[in-house]
Length: 178
Length: 407
Image (tube, rainbow over the protein chains, first blue to last red):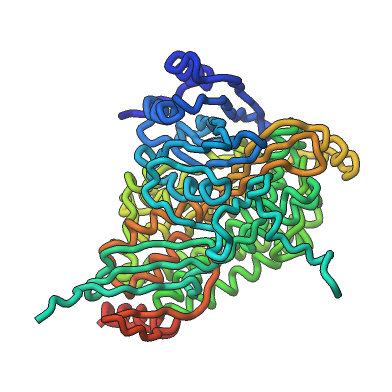
């Protein structure tokens, strides 16, 4: 497959056509750098959980190997949000498009499909989201801890902001006795 | 007669001199050949992202600087980029050029350090000492420009903290001139040496397809022929103004093997490229401010009104550094995700190591320039009888292989 770079607007329209009800809150952020005002572009949108995997699969219509950078994530109370950071069209000067897909998971059932069958390089990031946020990645090929130490109790998730967060494990040295 | 196992296990790490930070390999070995490898991380996870959400926007820059002692500029600067994107801060043009100078000095210091470590891993310690001598002049220049050698304290949201004045330029040119000579020498020593070629050519191959599938970054992926460099793909700072191109090994040799030798080629050529980029910056350095908002209290007051999210991407010496921030009109970041390049280059280790010999482990492990630290013990478990093989023994195995190949 030969990769042809596309405008961010065209990429977004392609997603919106493919998933008419699944893509929301799109925004294209442009900026410039240097004296030549070289433009860069970041595309953001939210994707519904039920079409998330297909949305990732849709990236392959633009490029044979879309690049996956990492997944960010945070706890918003009743939901956990994950932001999948991809990029398309590297290899040609100034043409790369950063793509950021946000997906919300209910905290009561924070399950999301693995994308490692599509992008094997996403494995470590998926493992990290499991242990840091308590997300369950369905179909992950290697379901073991990767960053969190073995002595951190099961059921404690360092990025959570509720009772399952790390508060009980934190030692504030300034509060200790001399 | 009972069937006996034909393979045995070698755990390496979490502490080992080939690794700048702890990581743990479990190798399954058949004779001398690696037939399986599993990798365990996280031995020094410091919860920096969590700690970063407890500090204000300036304090967190200095925390980011301490993520990595070698990429102590890339991390705070990627964080600054992410915050600037979220807060729509336009950086002055002069600051964008100054940012390139510091980024490329960091790349030079890192790549030369790596060349020394790689040479040491195959028993070529005279090159190690040569690289340390060369790197010292770069660190002296960094100290001259920033006041510090390692944690530079040069980053500021919206620009940089110190200017490069007219009087400083001759000293920079003098160091770069000397550096060019030293790098030519280093390139000759490392690339024209038949022993290095024997140890590194066709060793630890990462195919282009594997590099793409496993999302490898930096010199690791470029050495496999992938044209991927954030400075060019999505220019930031003043990189869009400068004349340079992707460095892949075929630039020098006309072909791509994706092996350890190609990773040496890419890094050495990138040192030369970095020198050229700094010279271009000094030639074109525009006048003007070095920071968008010089008053820290004003900057903090404006940032704590911002709601939004942003990403910051930089081509660090080891590849793309990626920072994500989410701001919620508060004193500190609501969410901060840091992804260092080694995070993306861990999985590519597996295809590089499979089928290779035990003695090749140090140089292959070092070839991605992993950002993980080191120490000195390995345990061999054979027939359920563990015996310790220290760092010296493993290093000795590597040297013995070099000598065998030279006979």
